[in-house]
Each structure stands twice: as C-alpha cells, then as structure tokens.
Length: 422
Image 1: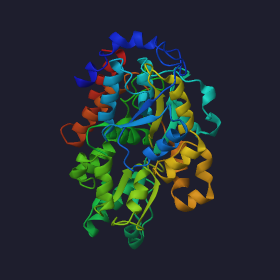
Image 2 (image 1 turned 90 degrees about the horizontal axis):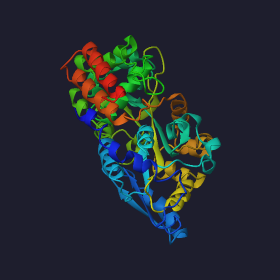
Image 3 (image 1 turned 180 degrees about the vertical axis):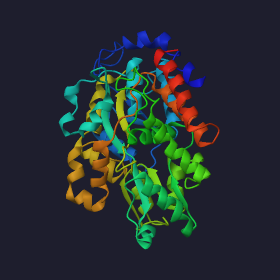
Image 4 (image 1 turned 30 degrees about the vertical axis):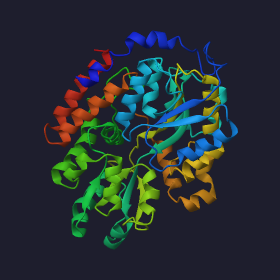
C-alpha cells in the first residue's frame, strides 16, 4: 500500500544524511564559511504576505538573500515535494517551512539539522507550540506559525433562531440538522477529502471524545477504543443523517472556506486564516459570522495543533545564514507581520494580549484559548504513512463504504504494521 511503501524509501540515504551536520550553523567544506544566498521552500502563500517579509531580510543582507520557492497549496503535495528533495540529498532548499507534524519524521530520517536552542526565544513562545519542534529531546525546528481549529458560525442566523453558538456536539448537530434547512443552506463542513485535512478532522473528533490514535511517543497504537469509535462515529453519522452534506467529502481548506464565505454553510471547522478572508469586501458573510472553540461531546472539544515550523536542510551549503534567517523569522517584528499581513496565528504569546491587535482581530482570545488546549497530531517518524492510513480508511467510513467499527478495526491493524515498520 502507498503508506507502507514510503517508509522503506530513504533508508539508503538516511545514515549519510545524519552525518552531514551535527547541528545548525556548522558549514560544509565548500560552503563559503556557511554563508551565502539561501532558498525558503513553503506551501503556497494564500495571503501574499511572505515576500514582503523576505524583502525586509534581503534589504539588510544583500550577500545572503533569500529566494522564495512556493510549492502547491495542499499539505500532501508540499510534503511529497519536500521529501523527494530531501531524500535525494539535494541542497536545493536551505530552509523549509514544514507542517508541525513533519518535524519528527524529517528529524528521524536525518534530513533536517538540529538547532541550538539558545537561538530560539522559547520563553516568548506559546508553551503548547514548543513540543512540535522537538524530537527525542532535541530541537530540530523553530516554531514559526501556530494554528488551532475554530468553529465558524453564522451569527445572524443563530441570533434570529435565538440559539447560542454550540458548545457540545449535540447542540451542533441539532442546529445543523434543524436550523440550516430553514435557510436553504447546509449544516456543517470541514476538510473531509481524504488527505491530511481529513486526518486532522478525525484526530480532533477522536481527541475530543477522550481517545487518541497513537501513544505519546508514537510507538503504541491506541485507536482501538470506545472513544475513537465515538469520535469517528459523530462524523459518520453527520453524513448519514445529512447535516454534513456529501459535497463536504470533497472539501479541502479552501473549498470549505469558500462554501462558508459564499453563504452555503451554517457551521464550518477551519483555521484562523478564514476570519480575515470571510470579513473582506465581497464576502457574503462579512459582519455576519463569529468564531468559537470547537465543541466536544460534553463541552469544548480538542483542536489539533496546526501551524508550521522552520527547519534547516541538513545538506544546506549555507547553514550559518539559514540559522540567522530563522532567528529573524521568529523575531517579534516578523511575528507581528505573520498576523497583520498573513492573517496567520503567531507563536509569540504576548501578541495575543495586545489590546490594539485584539481590537483588530477580536478572535484572538478565542484562538489563544484553543491553542493552549490544542494537542499535537500523532508523533511518529513514520507520520506520512500514519496520516495516509487514517485519511484513506476513515474516508471509506464517511463515504458509507464501511461501518465505523470496521474502519477503526482496520485502522488499528494498519497502524500496528506501520509502527512495527512493516
């Protein structure tokens, strides 16, 4: 299967790559003392802010400029292109803007360099975020952007119905099933296409129900539980009963955002970047929606911790420049731009309490609460295979091709094979 084959590729080069650098800032013999122009590889910048951030660096570092390389939008495609380059031993990408879930995989394979923790203002970073940048006690990336899922809702419609934003699954289900049809719209949407987004949505449901997919260290499969069945069953029931429209099974982040922004959904699970875009001129819901933490079975649920970390390619020819660039990208000035220009949640804790920023972004207190209680995706050096298995198998259940019980049992078997390295 696809997710099983990926674990075997790269073993041929892993030992060589691990020896390439003992840590960030150690130049290779032909690297001009580790300084020079570098490239930053990232998924597509949806808000167009990043080049202006890089211009600030390039203006003051004319001999060490950063070139932006934008990869596709979806996480799976970004991951595939980054891994192909890293596995080949290429130095094309010096710095990689990686999903927080990929740190363990890339560090475990020896593809990214260990970072001197003294270069990182960890005391200024939201505590829940720091763990996403570590692997086996070492720091292998710098927290750059954090994220937590939020529940967006049509405030105007709920106000007319005299209903408060849902805090529990039962309240969400009831409103989605009974109120949405009265207004000719669908009830609830998330990211349900079988890709990384579905893994996140399923993981959030399982965590909210009190379960987990893997143990803390990623070496134990824990998905075969009543809680996991309850979490996945909540989503499966939504499709069966119709308050999750079948169209949502084709949604990634942008498709789901546009559906909500164009007035076709009562509720949407998505990331904070949606807030600014849905508030912009031309949006059919501008000024008519709000955001609250994700609901759970008996109260607020658990979001999966999203966002991205900045890592240095272990084969970078200019690791000293790359290390300095990471320090720049996690400075307070850049972190402000991450929010004000990129509509992305920064990792600096103080920014969530800045009165001026709260006035401009009223969802910041809700987001801080969600980030503080968010939990990371399963930590595993084989995360790619884990995610592909979760998405493929749970998609079958959502598509009504298998029952919830059958999907959990099958997932338990597949994850056990992955964890064993089979």
